[in-house]
Length: 124
View 1 (cartoon, rainbow, N blue to C red):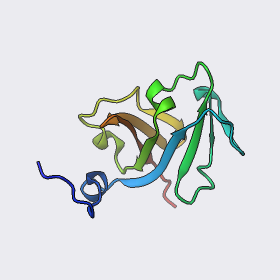
View 2 (view 1 turned 180 degrees about the vertical axis):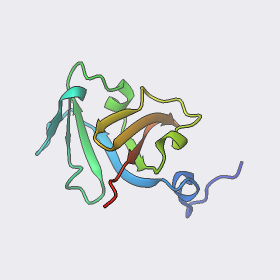
View 3 (view 1 turned 90 degrees about the vertical axis):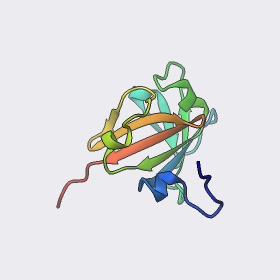
């Protein structure tokens, strides 16, 4: 197996065409301008204001989100076809639809959670 060189993009970008979306970082510390997401018992902040896509996530006891996502940072990529992108991957939980036109799946790669997001944009 050929190893990636320092100057090369990860295969997810270079070969699969996935696009960086955000970095999710778990925290126990309340942060300014948190938004509460009731079904997931979690607070999120930073996504809408970080020029690098850093999103802070704070979970309440009893959150249905997998423990690894609550404790280990994850990177998220936008994909054109979620069903194709997850073929052959062991998912953490099910594919979810957190909002209209958005589908999300997560899996583990090299010990870290990876999130894949598909957006169905309306044609105008």
